[in-house]
Length: 152
Image (tube, rainbow, N blue to C red; front, side, top):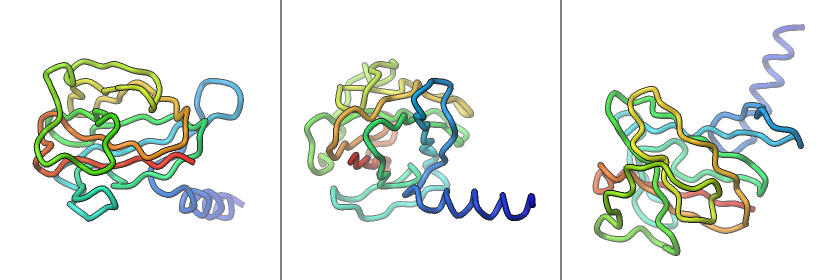
């Protein structure tokens, strides 16, 4: 019975488009999808917006209504910070020092996880509108530490 349940859960997780889904504390059946933040373990890849890396998955596909959280599994600080209005990754870092401070509560606004120490998690962000949202790391943008979220 346990093996069947584990196989069913693993199969369901494989259909999410990446990340880890866990029930949130709120009502309404919302899910929290976790994006891994690790420049060392998440290698660079090509995405529709350009070269990405440092986050897993590099392209996160989510439904509107999903909650997102970033978890730093690396040994040093990172951010996950929005690049508002961009359709491709800018050549140079688009960030000011304000990226080091946590801000925002929904994916369609200008948001940042703030500086995430090793092992830390960000605030949860509501995926409130469909679209493609680009983000990156204040410290390692040129790494390239950047990725995208596609909300449908």
